[in-house]
Image (tube, rainbow, N blue to C red; front, top):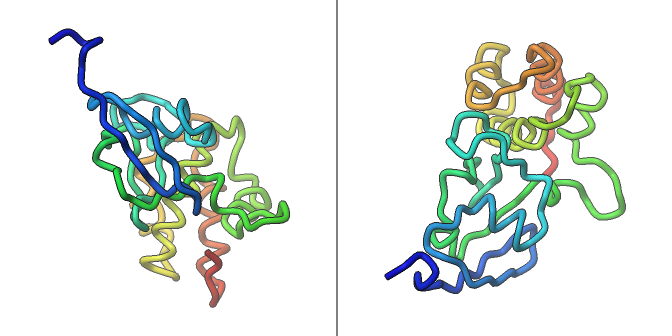
Length: 165
C-alpha cells in the first residue's frame, strides 16, 4: 500500500467547547490537525520532536505536547488550546494577563505553550515555589526571555487564593 492509499480515519474531538470532525491519515499529528484542519494557529509548531513545548495543549485537562500525539489517539478527547482560555468578550485569561503584566514574553512564539504548562502547574499546585515553577516549565523552551519574567508571572498568580478557568 502506498502512502497515498493509506486508510483514513474519522476523528471527532471537542476543541475549546466545540465539536470538530476530520478525516485524517493515521500518521497525522494532533498539532497539525489543530492548526491545519481546524485553524487553531495559536498552538505553535517549534520542533515536531517534543523538545520545545510550543505546541502544548490540554487534553482531557492534562498539559500535553501535541506533537507527541497522533490525531487518531485524540478521537473523543476534549482539548483546550490557547484560544480556548480567554473568556468570551475579549478579556484575557488571568494567566495571559499575568504574562502581559510581567513582560513574560518577547517574540511570543513560546508563550502559548508556556501558558498552557503554567495552567497545568497551577491546577495541580496553586502555590508553587520558584523552584517548582522552574522545574515544571523545563519542558518549554524560551530563547528570548531568560525565564525570569515568566517565573514572576506564574508566581504572581500563585499568591492568589482563587483560580480562574
